[in-house]
Image (cartoon, rainbow, N blue to C red; front, side, top):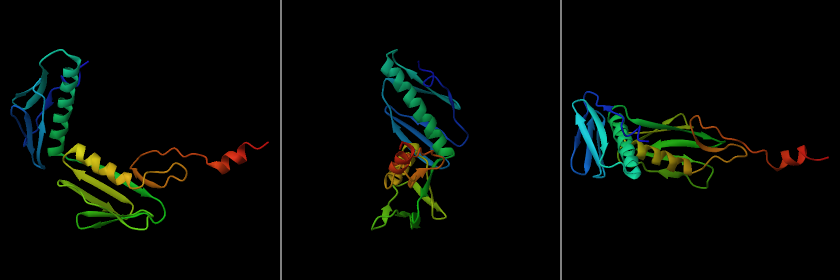
Length: 184
């Protein structure tokens, strides 16, 4: 138990990590991220490395150590490289259009669906059927991608809807296939 929490994270050049009593601040070339942390976890900065330490051997505290270690690791990656999620629109007439910063989706409803991205999130459209969500905060990028996907989730019979790139959708047979296969 506690392997992720004991991981030592290298701080790349151009990134500064500062720790106050309750806040971790990571600043890099792509921006700045803040995160509050529990006082039972100690964050130690040694030159170009950072690690987390537990105040006690309690299982909940050790779980928090792993959590804050992963959050710190994702913050460092976010301010250096950034994160992105790719979505595919599958279906006849389904398309995405970028209007300013907003995303407009035509998903077979009687009206277009407009998605307004929060601050720090960039939405790009490739062609008319691919959407890319980019940002420095992994949690916010995933939440925005999930909100876009929730507009029209993939249905299991024809596979139409919004899916993550590379997502495998298991299709169901349907009534006609069941009736044709079992009649004797």
